[in-house]
Length: 174
Ligand SMILES: Cc1cc2nc3c(=O)[nH]c(=O)nc-3n(C[C@H](O)[C@H](O)[C@H](O)COP(=O)(O)O)c2cc1C
Image 1 (cartoon, protein in one colour):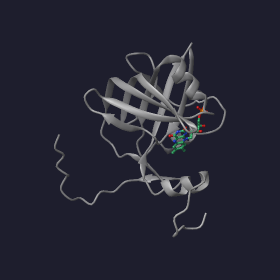
Image 2 (cartoon, protein in one colour):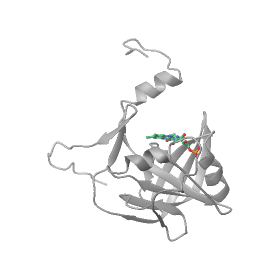
Image 3 (tube, protein in one colour):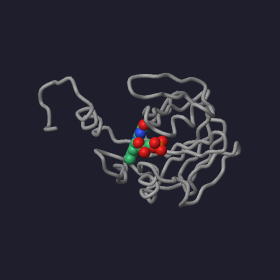
Image 4 (cartoon, rainbow, N blue to C red):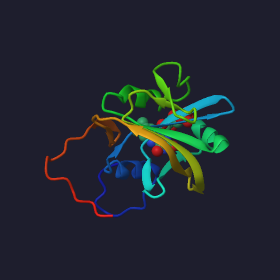
């Protein structure tokens, strides 16, 4: 789609282009249902509440991971670092065995998470909602840990890294 200077009612392709201006991090969502593991790359991970700690994820109807999260009522999020672009691609590819390659850790509740991810969070689904062509899940974080490192970012269909202005940190008052 050409750059739209007039307001339009966006179709799917236009929405993708428009929201490509909103840069995000990259996470892999994983779950296990009846002994079967599934997982996929997402950019829709959002922090919704701090007390209690609740994350939101939004999964397209035609993803295999959706069935796993629905069936188990649990998911884990691995927030990827800048050196993990290949993991993001592996978990976004159509078909194929996602867990055949790579290293995985286990959360205290037994869900697989990506080794070396900057943050690993295990969540229990506390609410969900079907909206448009996606199924949205709200997960309360039960177990989490993190490590230092540079985050992988996603913008306009491409992976990259983030550079701050080296200005003072923004004071965040609760
Ligand atoms: C950077 C990136 C972000 C993505 N974010 C989402 C997302 O938030 N929700 C979604 O449903 N699919 C998202 N996808 C697409 C899925 O990763 C892709 O459809 C995947 O094959 C689904 O896996 P599954 O069918 O095995 O569950 C994203 C892909 C990429 C590369």
